[in-house]
Image 1: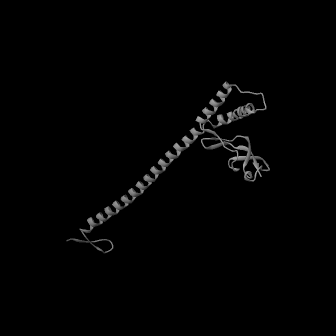
Image 2 (image 1 turned 30 degrees about the vertical axis):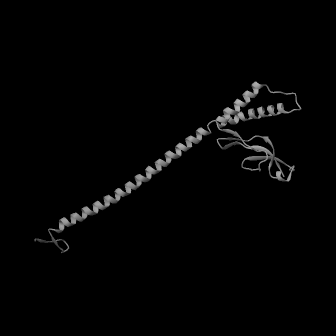
Image 3 (image 1 turned 120 degrees about the horizontal axis):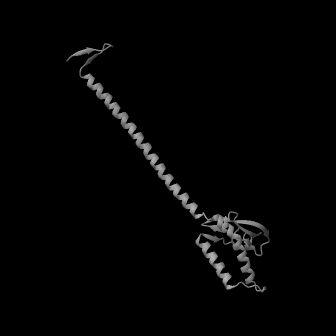
Length: 175
């Protein structure tokens, strides 16, 4: 075999050149493989992030659609209150007021339509006062011991739209 001297005085054989080239190629392969793994990891993370974004966006759209009519329904709530007061007044035995069947049908139909859109009135009479659901207008002495801390009277109904509070109930609480 032929031996050649390199610049530093080391002896190099002809077989060393292919070995060095092979080592360089192996290093290059390892570098490319690690870069490939990094790119694959970045891609998977980006893909997962995009999937989460799509799910979150779909959920937000669904929530928006569920409460899209909230402003309109909130504007109708005073009309419902007037209907309730008129009905309660007509049902009172001490008055001569009466509500015609046609008006009662409109009243019931309006409630059914709003119920179909997800509007539900809160049940407040006799339940424990909850500041998350009720707005206390005043406190009065409780008629019985078991009514302490409970709602005695409802001044204005509270409403939920698809389980989201759109108006708090205004109540009188027993103390």
